[in-house]
Length: 260
Image (cartoon, rainbow, N blue to C red; front, side, top):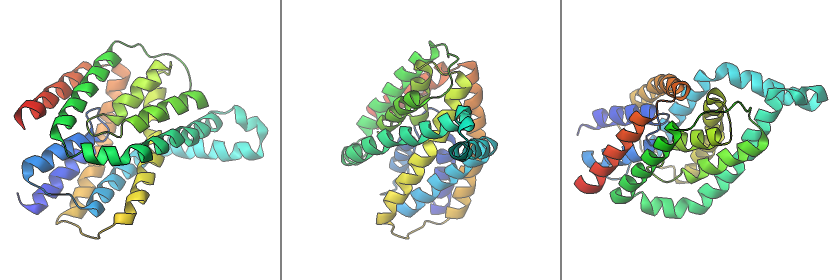
């Protein structure tokens, strides 16, 4: 496949599947296998992830500004510690700790398993089961707090395996803890920012400086479709229509197991 076209397709896959509950790592692995791409450039992967980070910041820009201002103002004014930003800020900070610890501990295992399409297919079937379970849950009315933040952070850490949807698992954890659908959606994706940025910085040690043709265009595609997919996921979370994605993950997972 033409390198420029392959880059654009990977940007599209990254943008859409980073947020939809279908596992971006699984879809990129499957595409690279089908396209015969032997080992993606680390620098290229980092740039695609940074493009979707930019999409998250763009989508939640107003929320981020308000929450950050409230969080830092609360250090100066104790009355501010009753505001949402104070609890949200600590939930993100403390929730990121188990994510980092689990990710670092499991990193060698994840790198080995990511080479197995059979494992990726099985993990997609697990994601399908999680999404099916999520379709039967009714969101609660709770707001985010530190304890829920840590639980969702653990879920995010466990989603490091290729084929396990990060968004699906963290949304499931949040709703199981009693969060409202909107609160679970917002916290799930804001919690992803430190994790993705931290992983990117960690991988800079292996920066090879090799970029494929069409890298800039692929980043633009990942950014645009990242914003679009966030809008789609918001609708899915509010409506609770998870069964389509459960069926999709099951079909793709079984096809990978038995056909690839």
